[in-house]
Image (cartoon, rainbow, N blue to C red; front, top):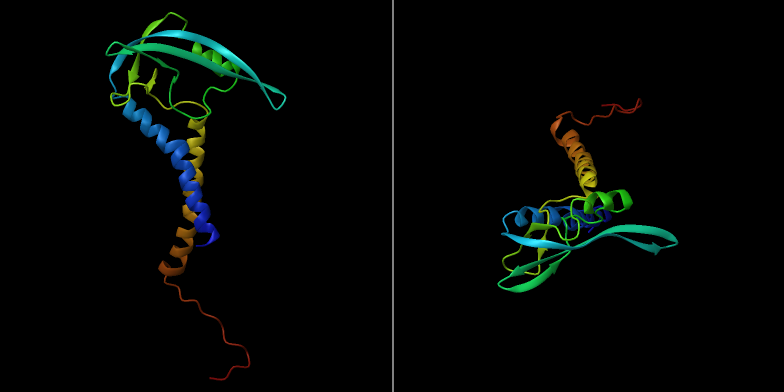
Length: 165
C-alpha cells in the first residue's frame, strides 16, 4: 500500500468520525421521542489548560423515563462545540436553571439524550472545508487519468535529427 493510499484512508476515517457520525446521530435523534425535562445546571465553566483560561458551557438537565430519573448534558451534536465565552453564553442563555423544556431520548438507551437534535459547533464550517479538500484531492488523479487515457492524443516524439528511416 502506498503512502497516498494510507493518507486518503486516514483522511476518510477521520472525516467519518468527526463529521459523518455526528451528523448521522443528529439525524437519528430527530426521530427520538420528546420527553419533558428540567434544566438543573446552566453556567460557564472556567479551567486552565497550558497556562490559558478556557471556557466551556456547562448545561445539565433531568428527565424521567418509566419513573426512573436520568441526567443529560448533551446540548447538540458536534465535536469542539461552543468553545469560548461568547459561544458558551450563546449556548446557555436560552436555558436558565429551572426551565421546563423537552429533550429527545434514545428509546433503546434512555441515558442517551440531547436537547437540540442538530449538528452544530465549530466543525460545521470545517465540514465544508473537508468536502472541498476531498474534492480537490480526488480531482487531481481524475484529471491525470482523463488527460492520459481520454484525450486520444498519441504521445509522439520527433525522431532525432540523425535518424534515417
